[in-house]
Length: 212
Figure 1: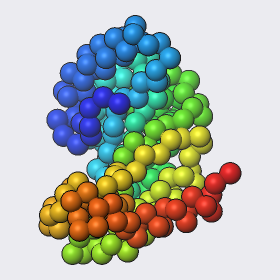
Figure 2: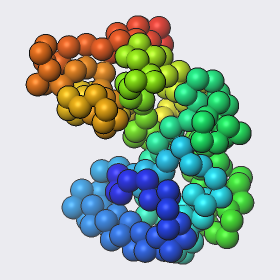
Figure 3: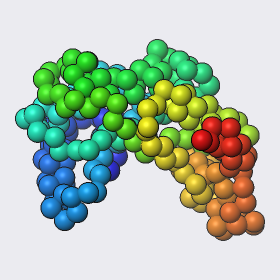
Figure 4: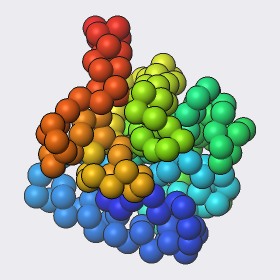
């Protein structure tokens, strides 16, 4: 997947610029290894609203009807506690977020100004980043609860989508830095390296429940 959450700011102009990068990257990758799957977007669910849609529409419109991707990459940071409860946008659920992009690519949803559709249908989307961090407001147990609920809502609404949790190991030891505390296990420099956190155990239990 190229880029990271560019739909959060600069919207339409950034989408037009990113289209050139997406097209170049796709053609280069496919020339080297045609079977590699290329995901684009890395779109954030946290601020899913018209401004984010402008970004997506801008690069799809610049593609001129040609398909420079195999799938979309989404970051469904929505549904922390329930399907529609989101401190940033309480009226959006992970279902809304996923459905909008699947329908946009399939022609069921009319873009803000792009007319391009790609017969995407039920092809898999990649949820390449989701999770929650441990903090003074969210203890280690509740970090796992929020992450698992977020995954469960996305999983229940997915087809054969792929899911990648952010992230496996804490990046550091600073308890006040959110980016240090997304992990399911403690940092390698912790007093017990890779010690399992509650979210690791909660994931293990979830996998046992939903595994085929």
